[in-house]
Image 1 (cartoon, rainbow, N blue to C red):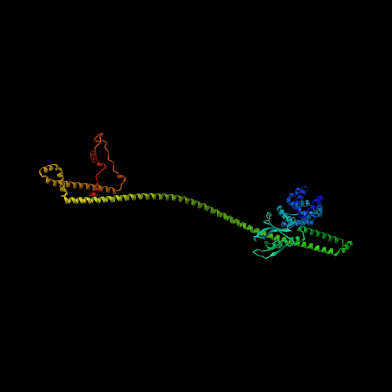
Image 2 (cartoon, rainbow, N blue to C red):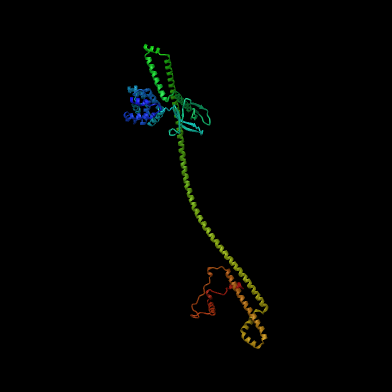
Length: 559
């Protein structure tokens, strides 16, 4: 320690090094030898032991070896209990001090850690709650954090309001994005000329105040009026410490408590020595200036104590209200959670029903798709059949038109033939005797042509035979023409009747049987012989169903 004090610590200047890293180095060098393993198995973890070690060094007396006296120990235990929202029970400490009288003069850091971890100084609900409370006290006392919390800050460029996490120290007011302190957004340096003021409500914001520095004015909004008052008082405290050149509020409070204790001890010693004349003379000889200074110091200490008590009472009241508020919020949240669960159950049931309906609709849609496919196939088949029918109808119409055309041609030919026949009949009736007489005469003439011709040629003169021959020739020619016209008319009528009658499969005419025998074996027939052979073969086969001559109906129609 002399070496450290003379060559290292004496050269260290406040603010030129990280105090926490230095304390961590001291903790590492001393904990292995002095810290018992049972300490970390109790209420305190290793990190908690280091934080308590730092707080112990802050509140300990300025003499070696370092000890913490009972008033400072009570102050620290009260701070931790209030951070856990609990009331500190001083009977536990009194019982411990009554059991061990050596602890009344002071407690070393290792004894302090051992008794606290064993639960002999403080009762905590859980290790987690104790760790959180200790972290808050450590940040406040060790890092000189006067106040911290969320505030709304108005931007300097964009002029919009953003929520930021503020940390107030005696020298600065720093703000971050949130309380994890990972992203620092800015810092307000507090100077002697800085001022904090309340602002009227504007732009729909309430509980406004501002911090004016030499550079700019920072506008902020608290959540309620109480928070605004607390923040304004905290900033004023920081500005007062800054003006007095003090960097730590708790260090100042520690010195004030120490002076208070010294004053009390002095007053007690003065009261014990009132009967001694030397003490009375000493008091009488004390200058009025010293007495006035002592009275002023006592008044200042009493005012600080009174303020501290008021702050403590106010903080307890705030914590109570905050706890009630949190409980009300918790009840509301539980109620909302139950309503949300019921709504979720209803929504789940509704979704299940909707899924069933969706499945049914999908099934119906699938069936409708199948039906649509079948209907499309049937429609396509119907369209195809209709097209075929149209093609067949057009073909039949075309055939019917051709038949009608042929029928018109036949009727035209028939009318022409009838006209020719009538003309020939008229000509025959006007130029020759009746047909019956002509036929008889012609037959007689034909049968007796040769002898008559011979006799007439022999008996009559040539000038008389020529008119007779010319008249017979004309008569024969007319008869031939008449028979030819009659046959042609019958033939055309037969053809017309056959065209007008629809053709059926049973109307096919059987083929003529072909006789294997031939009159001339191995030789070809002449045309006349073939015609004679065919005519002779037709007559005996009329009973087989083949009749080249017209039917009676056709004869009636032709007549």
